[in-house]
Image (spheres, rainbow, N blue to C red):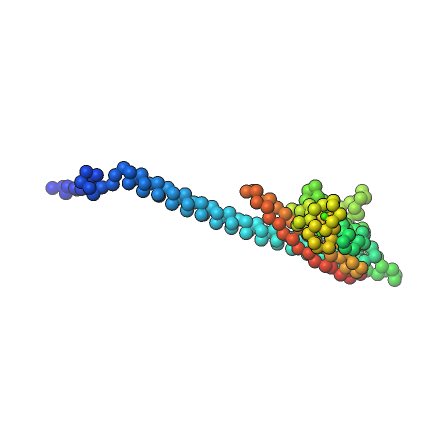
Length: 206
Ligand SMILES: [Ca+2]
Ligand SMILES: [Ca+2]
């Protein structure tokens, strides 16, 4: 003989079940809890994304300024233009490096340039700039138009760093060294803006 399965149900009439109202309230609570949990996960994941992007941008700023510094270390003080000192500064630098000595004479490299291209927010390196033989390499992207808290074109030092109207990439030479300031800026897909600033001073070796 087959076993018979008895399921004892409860209903509102005998006082032991759930009313429709109770079910609705429970359902609403579950929906609210799920919504909050989802929001929390989204917020956490966004914060994680921002941290990762910020770290990437910080790293990029360090890499770009290291590359510029390495190039300018080999430059010659007297063959570096414009030779401006703070508060004056420039978003490009022209220089030549010593390749060695031949018959008692120093042999100089072809003219080189490192410059900010504000239209593309890039920093580029050039060999033989402004000639038909120009050779260009992009060294970094996301360069900010201006340094943080600096307003352009007002002939004033708005961010209190001694430099006037300095761009996202700026050079100012003090006798035998050059200070490089670099600020990168990036707008993320959710509209948040992040930035990374770094600076260094390089002594000319030649
Ligand atoms: Ca300034
Ligand atoms: Ca200014």
